[in-house]
Image (cartoon, rainbow, N blue to C red; front, side, top):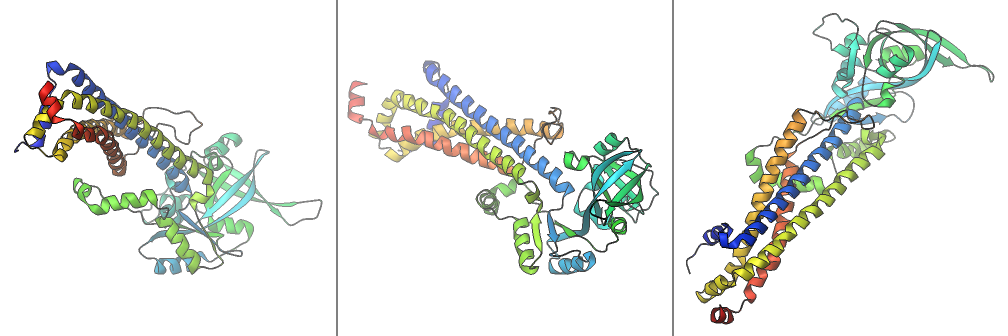
Length: 438
């Protein structure tokens, strides 16, 4: 029998007047899959935006990897040269840092603050603190120096905008820094130093915007009469994966998706394990260890939302079972004729499989396209404002090719499951009985 299945599928999908009920059920199945796919994709885009935006805020102000020596200080230049020679392809930049606690005094108002001493010439390449500066004093033009190098000179510091509000500080103001020194059991001796407000930054995290400041590591060491750095901050080379239409047909693309979904290893974790074996006694950790609760909560929330919305899509796919059972019952005369003409059973089964998968494919594809359009506008024009309880000010959206691929594959698998059950029933139709009575 030389009848192509796509032709029969197309004729069955055409909505005839006498098949109004089948036509309506097909539209309901199509819309259910479309809405389910749209909701699942858009939710994943928004959850991915929350996760990546929050990570960028936390990772931007903190280094990807931090190395702390076992005792006291470390020579930042020596360790930097060693690491860059050992990992020339993996490490982009390193910077020596130190953190100390001081008392800030201005017009008889005092507050405790943490001062982070950085190497301005390297810190710009490790963190994005420069991008967080909202106001700064006028700077002299110097193309050979970064903005951070020109700001953190001598006794100049950067402070958080909430600290500036609480102490009524302005650009160019001079503040007193009180440093505790050794004293008696009943008294604490304080040394007073002067510092100038060179800039005000806004990170969006209260722990930094309140009672936190940045200075050059040389100035911080001069305050406490020290040398070297407490720790070394490291930034790794970004894994940029250019995406093209051709990438969709690459087996490596899907292998990477599966690897990221089902393995815990990452570039950061691999580098941390290498550094620990290379530097015994040193403590090496990722920025994620500073915010374990938030990182875990964001990941759990994304997976839970994905699971819930997959169930909603599954419910929409279940309509396909009813549709195909009714259609098989209605088309049993055609099935009997196909069998009598010699069409194999597997082709008859594939006929209804193709009907269900065609509806699923069209519904999921259109749902993905609509979610992509909405996600594009949310990512390009973040106009939905969020309350202050979130780490972001507007509803974030981040589109990744992996989201669309995973949603499409999951939807098609659900559609295959929903169509396989009724399609198998088509082989149970009795040819003789149908042709005799119908």
